[in-house]
Image (cartoon, rainbow, N blue to C red; front, side, top):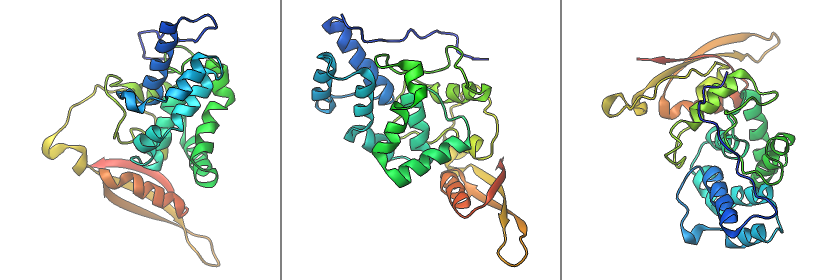
Length: 253
């Protein structure tokens, strides 16, 4: 079941909206899509805002424009790992976490083969987006009510992504790399503030992997890698690119 207590009232742009209501919709889109960062006046997409207020584009189209902006690109594409970027796209545009490794892999493929804009379009043009938000509802976290077809574990993963919503998503590492790569459930735990010699920078993880050998007889060999937290995402990407299958990821002292 969902662990959210507070219900979110969707923000919708109505045909008879006042100027103040239109501005509230614009602020809500910036907050949701840009991960709660403070948007300076010079960073606002004034032309797109005018199109939205004049009824020339829908909220869905405005969301698409914001997610394709130079600001979004620099905040979340240039400064994130491929996994982290896609994880945030799910959060910002669909209001949920990725359900499994297959979803991540599909969006990595779209981004690599078709490009950045196609990756953004794959969310805003999806049936899921249209069913949940339509043309004029601002995306919001999909944990306040039951969503048809959503796996139970996705509620926990979405909760993990939404925790700390008062802070921005700028420069945040991926929170779900371990769980998704190893197909593990995401546990809801109390947030812990860790600093000093026990911070994430020196945490180490063992990755148990099987690989297919090359030769006349197909054989699978078991291998274990030990990496730091900072190396974890790149090592997982490397294993998957070379055809390895991750069996288990465990934290080691």
